[in-house]
Structures are given as structure tokens and as C-alpha cells.
Image 1 (cartoon, one colour):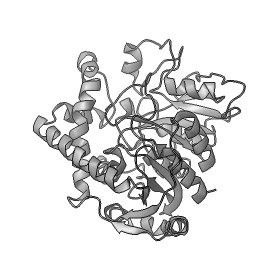
Image 2 (cartoon, one colour; image 1 turned 120 degrees about the vertical axis):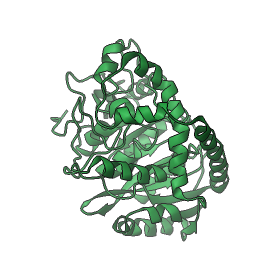
Image 3 (cartoon, helix red, strand yellow; image 1 turned 180 degrees about the vertical axis):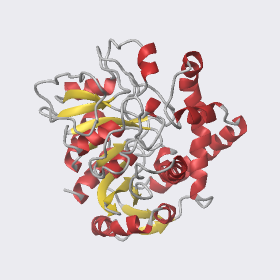
Image 4 (cartoon, helix red, strand yellow; image 1 turned 90 degrees about the horizontal axis):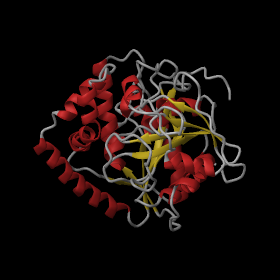
Amino acid sequence: MPEDTVGAFVPGPHAQVAGAATGPLAGLHCAIKDLYDIAGWPTTYGNPDWARTHPVPDSTATVVTMLLQAGASVVGKTKTVELAYGLTGENVWHGTPTNPAAPDRFPGGSSCGSAAAVAARLVDFAMGSDTAGSVRIPASYCGIFGIRPSWGAISLAGAAALSPPYDTPGWFARDAATLRRVGEVLLPTQPSATPTLLLKPSEAWANADPDAAESLAPAIARLEALLGPAIPVSLVPEGLATLYETFRCGSAPEVWAALGPWISSTSPEFGPGVKERFAAAAAMDPALAAQARAFRRVFQSRMHALLAGGAVLAYPTAPGPAPFLTATQAEQNAERERTISVTSIAGLPGLPEVTLPLGTADGAPVGLSLVAAPGRDLALLALAERLVP
């Protein structure tokens, strides 16, 4: 493996496991986000107190086992934001990976190390996880391909939880063909489904920085050549900020249910911003959480009906390029709200989303997202490969 010049991997010896001699991923090397168990290697979940209070696993996460059986070889575990609770990619304990595409900017999180490893050409692909955007955002920021699959399509057995009703695995690659090859191993068999219609959600495009949106125009033109003229649609008459509040209030009780008992009993040390996010999760008003769950059901029904016939949404993955490393905490929080507002379009209803590195703004990468109905993951990956052969 090439030298890790971007700090993508967890400090210390690299977890290395050879894959099967034959299989659809034979010869490929991958990295694994350090919230998936690998037998014989610690799972630190980005925090030294987590590593201290959890035994070294004696079994391997299902998704990692599937990759190994398909012939991929694991070459190391990658850094994550502490307990996967953040979108910048910062980790004060292990070090924040360098964004290979924009070294003066954050790599994005929480799957920061996996994105950096792929962008720096250290591995062929890497596993991450996505709850609020933790694959999609670092993929966009680092100029690579990434996918958040349909919620529940792939097992998370052997993976540390953040907010189970939203958690999904996900992976990164430098090309659409590799992204699809991994999907054909991990995803269940799905009916063949050809996309039939291209939709442009007005809220997501209005949320994007003007130069970021403009840079994606050629990609939309290529999509229109494949699927016909894009049709503007409004997804959230209630306002895009409603999606952020729905995610924030609805996921908080799930986060605290998953991790609160450990936090309360251990009193772990956290880096900047992480402790505050968990405190906010613990203090969430039950009435607001109930309202969020109710609106999530409404939005889920709305989106499933809109996309059921084979339509595909296309919009900027993030509002703009990655924040600069010098961004204040207030600036980071403001960008986090804008970003989760748009990642929630797919995240709240559990839809598959693929992000493609097709734009730039201020000299840094910007991704274009394609979103389809649940269970159309493979069709979405095939469309991405047609768009970027």
C-alpha cells in the first residue's frame, strides 16, 4: 500500500486481512471505517474512551465479511469523527485527515478517513457509514464517488450504531464502475429498473451556492440527454429548513438511546462540539421529537409516491465545497444546518443516493446527487456509470 501521506488511517498497526483468492472483487484493496468490527482488531469509534471500554471483537462485521468473501483485501481501518457524530471530519484524538482534493479545507465526515484514503489513491474503495450525510458529504468534498444505499438494504451487524432508524453503510470509489462492482456484492438482488424521468428539486438548487450550482449545469445537460428534459419540482412546500429540524429532533432520541447509557456511565472525553451535540440529543423535547416523527412519515410517503414510477432526482450533494480549516465553530454549524437540510431529502425517507464528482466551486470539488425510490440502488449505480463512464 502507498504511504499514508494524508492521515487517513487510524494511528498504529493497520488491520490487514486478505480476501478470497477469487471473486468479483478479487485484486481490489479496501479500507474500513473504524466503526465496523474486524476480528482481532480494536474498534475505537474515533474515541480513546470507547476503545478503552470495549473489548477487541472476536467476529467481523457482516458487510466486511461479504467484501472479503468476494475477494477484496482489507488494508486498514480509517479514521472517523468521534462516535460518527459530525460532518467536518475533525478528530482531535487521531488527527483530522487531509482533504487530498483541497488541503486547506475539511475532508468531511464522519467517514473522513475512508474518503481521504480513496481520494489519495491509497485503496481502490473504502467503507463508510451514513446517518446524516457521512458518506455523501465527504465524497462531495473530496471529489470522489459515494453511495448511501436504501435504508435497511445492507446489514449493519457488527457496526457501532449512532441513530439506527437512519444509519446505513456506504462506500467510496474513484470511478462509477468500481462503485457499482461493490454494490453488486453488497446489495440484495433487485428487479431491473430503468430510470424514466429526471426531476430537479427547486429547494435543493436554491440552497446551493450559485457557482456550485452553475458548475453542475453540464452534468445536468448530459443527464437530460439520457432521460429527457429535467422537470422542476418542489419537494418541501413547508421549507427546506423543515427537513433539518425534522432530522435534528427526530434523530436525537435515537442517538441518545443508542449511546446515552455508555456516555452516562463512562463520562468520556470529547473533542470540540461533540459533547455539545450529545448534550442536545439528551435534552431533546419529547413533543418536538414526536412532531418530527410524524412529519417524517408524511415526507416519506410523499417521496415514495413521487419516485415510485422510476423518476430520479438530481441536485447538488452539498450547498458548496468543503469549509476551510480556518472556519469558526459558528460558521461550521451554519454550514452543517444548510447541508443536513439537503441530505435529509434522501435520509428521512430512506432513499438511495449516489454522489458523483462533477462540479467545482472556488477551486474545490462539488458533487451531483442522484436519488431514486427504495430498492433502485443498482439502477442508480448503473445510471451513474452511464453518466460518467
